[in-house]
Image 1 (cartoon, helix red, strand yellow):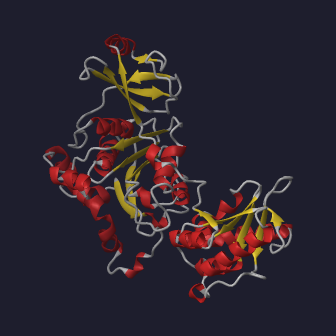
Image 2 (spheres, one colour):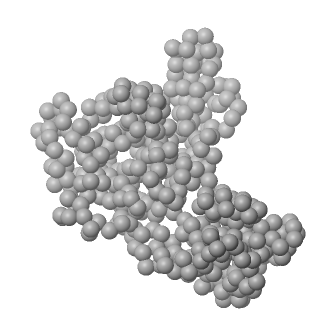
Image 3 (cartoon, rainbow, N blue to C red):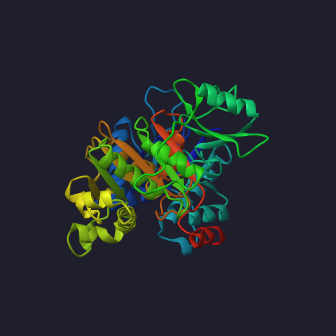
Length: 447
């Protein structure tokens, strides 16, 4: 049977085009939701931009008919679902406890439509508000979160596989330089630039490291890479793979996920400094973090722009100080012991993501730290800024999210990891082992 989906405000503010993702089912937007969206329209944040986009979409759709009576969501499609803006006529009255709230209005619409169709149509409330889902259940109305852009976090692509093969196969891999997945008895579909740990099934210490080449459809032995990048040595195999992807200029998008202290940001900055200052592959290293929430005005903080940025960018500054403060006299002679000289020479820029919209970033090594706090739409905005010759690195922990509108299953980082895993321009590595300190690793495990 065709379903009726009632959308909450947070669904539309998170993704204006969500109204088109319910196939041939009908979509209902309560008038109270339209009023709430109107309150956000003047915001200069991503939420405000989404609110304005919702208004533009609805204004365009109303040309097809009357919104209160229902208009087709898709033109020239016989089985198109319809969009209704529900004004609230003949609604059931809920207890005074919920009076004058948008939740009250949504629940009342749900009850009214259930009674109207008497089981012939399933009515479902779509909301990111867990409390509204609890209330819906109490009133006997089915409710769900928006699932269209969700990723199953328990099966999130890690970028690394482990294979056990006979010793002869390991020997052939080294001898030939590459083998097909079938020759390695690998029956699953490999992702582009997926890394492989191939070990002797009798002697686990005998290993080969490989990567799946999208063009040749073969798993080839990884080419040797520098183990000392601006004083940084990879301490585990995942860090080796991550550094390899960061240093490969053919890969234009690298995503590094992992918990606190796994080395995501430090590896990315070290690779960016090498590619920018030593190898001159890129003109500038650009490091950015979302100032939560993305788009907040920095004017409320005292001081000039640098002073305003300090509280937000201090983790980046700490990593740069660590890299420049090591025993590297040659680099210290060139750049000093502070990152300021790199900035003065135009090789390094540390910026908020607030003003990224509308820019074009050519020939840059662009690192976006804490990218798990961004929505899929915000990540798209960033990736579409990439100019010719630019490499983008996204780092973050999907389980450490501060943005109230997203979670581990629908944030921008996990969204990109899943969407790009079959692109030869992208590579991903999940860093599992903490390397910050013994205490930090133990705290991550126990707490």
